[in-house]
Length: 249
Image 1 (cartoon, rainbow, N blue to C red):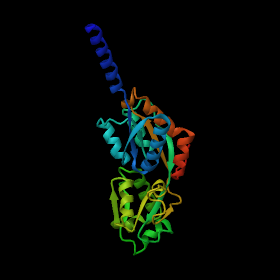
Image 2: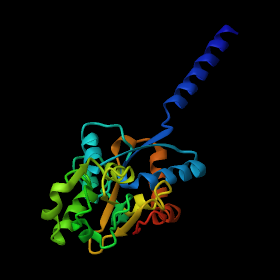
Image 3: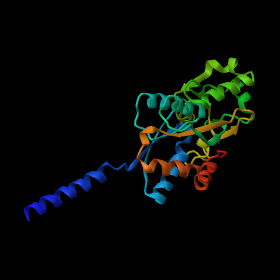
Image 4: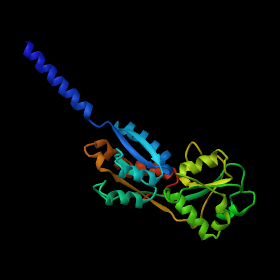
């Protein structure tokens, strides 16, 4: 009887240990512009599959550096496919990235500044400070700087530029009225938290950004990571992304 009890106890402990080591949360690293959409997708994935996810956001350059330094992320949704490609080339992903969405640049103001003339609106003396994501870390910051240079505006306003580490930080400056206007992604101004706040205009002729995603090697054995990834690429996932102003392949 004692031997049977010990055997049962051992098997029970073994099974509990097995369940305890099963990955139950997917760590999803997301470029700041896509966080609102990914949070909605995460809720849909949880409801449909039971897979829980932890959404971590920042600039694409910052996240890429964290992955190279060994961060325990399972998925990486970059704001520019090139950042995802670099993680693949460095050996952190077994497969090359896929483009999951195409984003658009907008100019946004929340203090009454007229931005209806797009980039040229920034030439107005009433525009105090202009928020931009760091062009070396944030793809939307890079595209914003390119758009200003294309219109011959950059050299005239560069003294008024305030750089945020990510598009999220640039957006927060606009929302708090710390700046007169700022560049952000269309997905931010269409998010439930920001919809109807201030005025914005899409920048015609600005580079559209192909946003890339990879499954990282850290996700090996985590079936939830693959389920999350496939949901983003599914018709249901694309519908959510389109709601936030993204074009989907």
